[in-house]
Image (cartoon, rainbow, N blue to C red; front, side):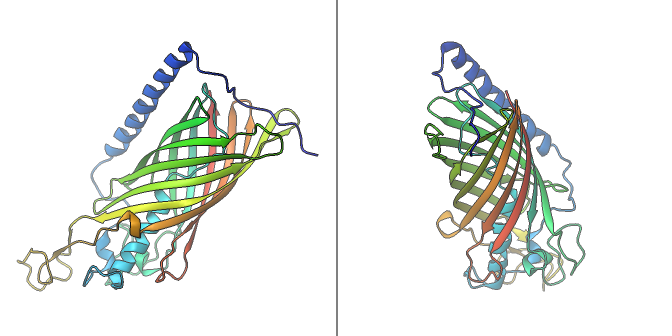
Length: 327
């Protein structure tokens, strides 16, 4: 028999005092995100072990999708986007108009480290710390700061900042979630829609901008009147726009070292821009959250799907461990 469920927040209307509190909280959201971004941007301008260089993908002969270097570029940017994007480590239920959550997530994101788009070609490794021909790390560790605020009408908004360990790269984002059904009927799971936008910063040669849409379903169970267990599942697309900065292959493969022009005879080139409409990824995730008083912990398994015909293994797994505080 299912245990009695209990709520961790109130759905009452927002009073004037709560409106002032909401305004203050939103200012804190903005200030904290700016502070995190400032600290990350202040990292010394030097290469770190997990910084990447697109030179290791090889020079494309054309912008066609069939070009081998372009295919490596698409595969690498897709797996990097899936790894860096803050995960939806939350059930469908919202925080309520007076709810506020601080969360810290440690993400372990698998990649296909033995593939050429991670090891590099032509003797040039992708990662700064790797030597030519070395394997890339088997996983990218990404700690994330996540802050959410509950609003009236079963809406949550939040901001996040994710950092790739041993690199200068991080991703900042914002999200909104609206609960379509929030456990008002016993035995009927909560259902919510979530949308998020995220931007990769700190990569010298790569720019990624993601838009996500998720459908989340969850069901809360009371345990002994003290704990709350909430399993959740979600699924949705992630549209990723990717662009490349100008790359200089000097002095690796330039016939005329004086010629710095673009084109076939020069040392400067760039990969084509991947538009949202042509670069859709998919994410399936499942997890569980345990709440005790105002503290909660959760685990989420996230499966990213890269639907490219030229990719042999299209599924990339991520593991997220979260600890949060509701205030």
